[in-house]
Amino acid sequence: MFEKATIRKNIHQQIVYEIASRILAGKIEPGATLPTEDLASAEMNVSRTAYREALKVLTAKGLVESRPKTGTRICPRKHWNLLDPELMSWSFGIGPAKAFVESLSEMRMIIEPAAAALAAERASEDEIALIHDAFERMKSCGFETPESIQADLDFHLAILNAAGNDLLASLGHLIKSALEKSFELTTDLPGAREISLPRHADVLQEIQSRQPEKASKAMHLLLTEAWSDLVLVL
Image 1 (cartoon, rainbow, N blue to C red):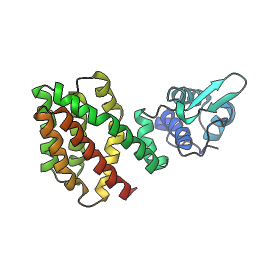
Image 2: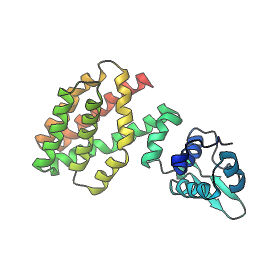
Image 3: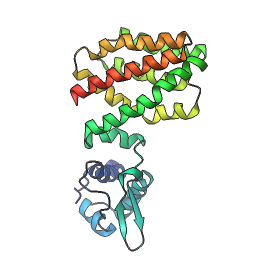
Image 4: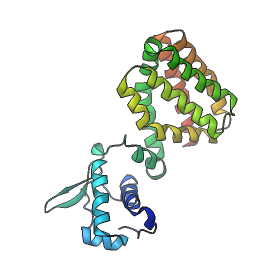
């Protein structure tokens, strides 16, 4: 079931990734039982202790559960902690990319327009300055460069932080890696990032003008067009 671990330096993380990747890819389906500790550690050429510790991490991520007499089973997908930064990052390269990115986009549609409205109401001048700075960096550092992607990421995270809600700010950090990877996808569509710049400008303008409803609508339009671009590259 498993491949032998070859990177001894970080064996614990490798075991977690090996099992998680198979679960996320559907190679081990929910309800399936993992091999016993003795068998799995032998197959992967790792110690029982390392394998046991890896299962604890997978349990914390909601991927598996261990019960007496029944062994370790794969949990239903609804129990997976898909907001876990590692699972979000791995899902791009392992699972069905389009389904995952669509779920991410839907979540952003629900959250970010509301966050933009709150930012228009609550943001301090310093917080608005951070949003503005990120936008200026998007304009100045090239549209398909790593620096542009980082600036785009900073723009959206700054808005979540400026909403004045600790949970929204925390959510931004949770989905940071997934957002970054989704932005990277649009670099495969020539001109897409450049075309999106006026939409970012609209969001910034409405937040600066303290127009919550307009800020929400501007963000919704930005995300709608972003999803249209992603569909073309998935």
